Image 1 (cartoon, rainbow, N blue to C red):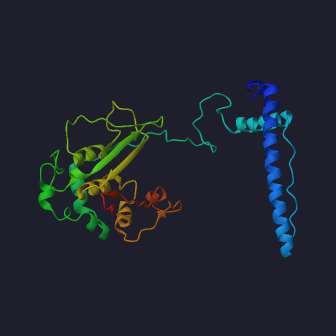
Image 2: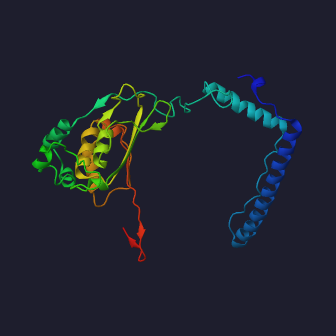
Image 3: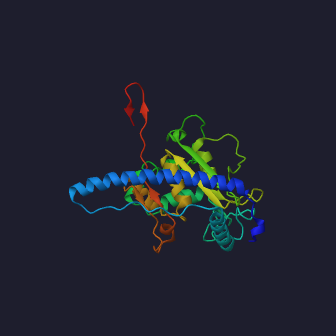
Length: 283
């Protein structure tokens, strides 16, 4: 970067700013020295080691400020192809990696038949059996035409109380809601429709990431999450965390694990409390 590219700073303005900075620094150092002297007297009275006065660094000058600024800018221009100093758009971190993913996710598509087969054939752990209680051995549920409830108001599995916020993330780092032409559907069916595919619609922009936030999922939705996410995360392990009566506060990712799913997983436990009513009942 050439120095001629820098925005010129008026000398008089710079000198005034430096004068104010130096004055503030002098006041701070004077206060610090007075405090040190009081501590010194107290320590001397107790027979402890003496403490010397605080050393004062050299005041700032316009030339020194310019040299420091130029040095920092020259280092920045060497490390980054584009930055705020050059006026170019820079979306890269200091190590050259992008701040957000810009590679499209692999196309994925899941269907009801695959979900039913996953429920029937997966070797569920004890945690999975507890979470999916009422689903694993419910053949009438697994054989009905519409696996997920379609009623918009209520459902027999209380999945109408589930909530989901699911977004795709584009190559520009912005999130958007993938569109589905399914008309009015139940909450559980809408969550399933947003879980069961990635980059399936050729008319939509390619997603480079996916954000999935599901609250109070029904057992069937837990099974859907396990089915669609088990390729990317160890869902059996996550289920264990969910039923653990004394969970750890956080489980960082394991960069040296053989299982790639463990290398990309970070689990943390967050508890919250809600006060309701005049008696402030804690939930």
